[in-house]
Image 1 (tube, rainbow, N blue to C red):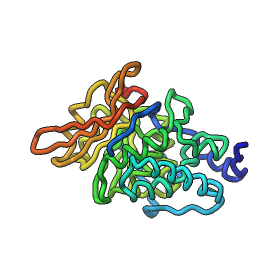
Image 2 (image 1 turned 180 degrees about the horizontal axis):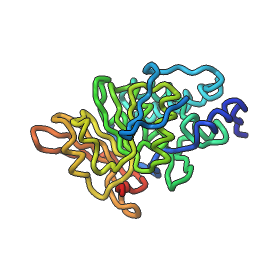
Image 3 (image 1 turned 120 degrees about the horizontal axis):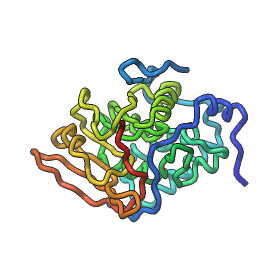
Length: 270
């Protein structure tokens, strides 16, 4: 039987809101490797220290245990080679980003739909995509598709700065608030069209796209620094989709097939 969320934790999560990430993942083949509203500029940034820790009221022992078991299973597949990524997955409390009634469901290796036609991604996919960015901890990362903020929280622990764009206003505002409340200090969120990127803050060392465009957006490639990496699922909503890693070198772009995936389509803003 699933284990229920403690009453205090459940009410706290409800107060934060139940936004979720703006992508969905299905089957995937083996891979190679308290609050203030957003500012008038549309940007909200966390203000607490980087790498937050959580008391048992927010992250009870049962949640930590389930999270360790989940990450151990991901590690056993040998699809993720960066230990720092696995540790970030152990450290980020997924249940605080997911609209899951039971802790067991929050730590199932599956996407969780929560409204707006969106989901929080399957943890294995989050780990694989983060690993594919080849982060050392010094990079500036652009994320397209903030959703609930879970992927941004993971990225924040393995990079220098995270800039995240969400096209759905309710999701973007709630994610910015959630990340700020939880103390992810190096994440900035804005509501906008991911297809246009964030030119004011470009170039970025890494870019991750968490919804599927039909082809790689050239604007995003233009905002990628030389020797930078862009990871994105590419393909149509009801057709074949492939996760690619793009490397920009000397003005040319190399691409690498990382396997089959299933995401919701990337939506342009108004």
